[in-house]
Image (cartoon, rainbow, N blue to C red; front, side, top):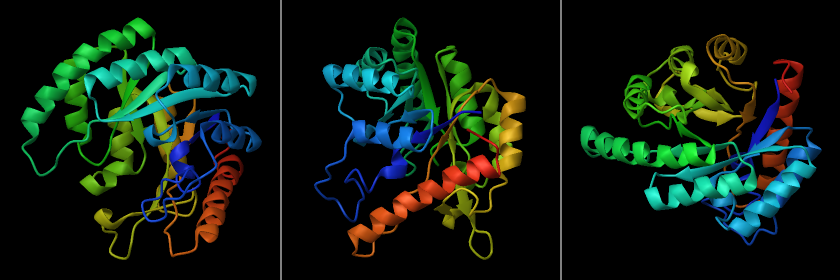
Length: 272
């Protein structure tokens, strides 16, 4: 199965680490080159890693095609005007998927937020259909799989599905196998991630690691995904590294854990 890169894996290189923001010389075009050099097949860009500028997106899409890479774009939140513009921008770039988060406020009542999300998603799904781009809602440590499924059923659009993250629902007390089984039939994009549970296996303190260095049963999760979905590609997502006052060290470790993840995916998961 082809492997892509979630640009979040290079968050520090792109100057977006919350503890070490810097004037990075790297941009979205550099990310494409990195993915190509690693022998990967595509890139999903996090929203802070590209500009919503149609001219730039057209150039980005052209370069992706030259490198034979597929594209996916991302957004945080579902503000309708920006999301509609992003769907149009995705079509300009030749991106097939726009990954979104609902950004649920866990300190506020959930039902009113879901009602608002439902209205917006129904509205924006018409634009998704118009541009031929899928909206993929990430399970983002806010909704349980059942809550997300109910929302999808109410939206009732073939252009609105799931960006399935293997590890996120651990913090909601879900077993990753259950998350995959429930969401796989609606999945259009996947974050291949590994997590380490601390002593006592407290899911709320799960740490994100390079692939193969955590506790997730990745082979089993991929098997369940293949059996229950039509997904034909996966995106490696490694976390940005902890910053300890040494930017160069953080950059080296970020590159190293991505390289280890790619190697593990090929050698042990037989992907890519």
